[in-house]
Length: 217
Image (tube, rainbow, N blue to C red; front, side):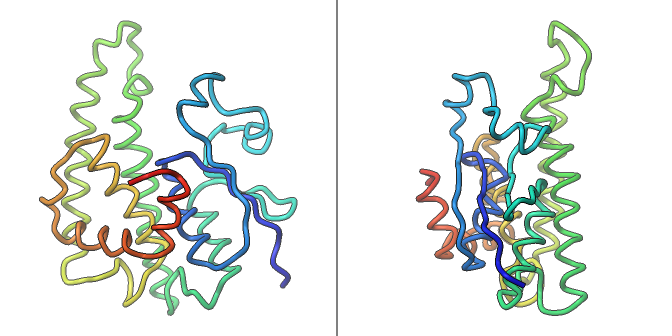
């Protein structure tokens, strides 16, 4: 199978940091467009180029030749299939299943539900004056902290989330740890196992390259 031409679209500091890391881990050649929130604010959202590729008007988006792939788990999967020697979804069938278990939980529960409430509480209440937004935000913080506690317990005694090496699950866990530091401003040291994993991911050359490319600390 020939390697397709890859172009990646992301947003500084967003969940798209995770597939950006995986692309560096894979060793695949790719080009990228990384949007900045302040630039998008000036034009009222994502440009038409992105919306034509993804009518959901969200990132990440990746094009593989003429195919457009959206949603983190799908993009992770394609990257892994194109770089099988990197074992980004583990080294055994069970490890692959465990990686998907993490990705589904993080994508559906932590990202869409809990952080969805945190970033955009107005999506969850139909009150024009926004009087319930603070209640939704408070509930979101409680949910997120409960999820972080669960994650910390799952990582007890482990260097990596699945198996004995880095996988896509670790890259995805890393970005949500960053969000816990900012903008959520939780004391992430309360989750020592999660902190240990996040530091291990942060030290990888792939992560350092992405942080530099996106202007992140």
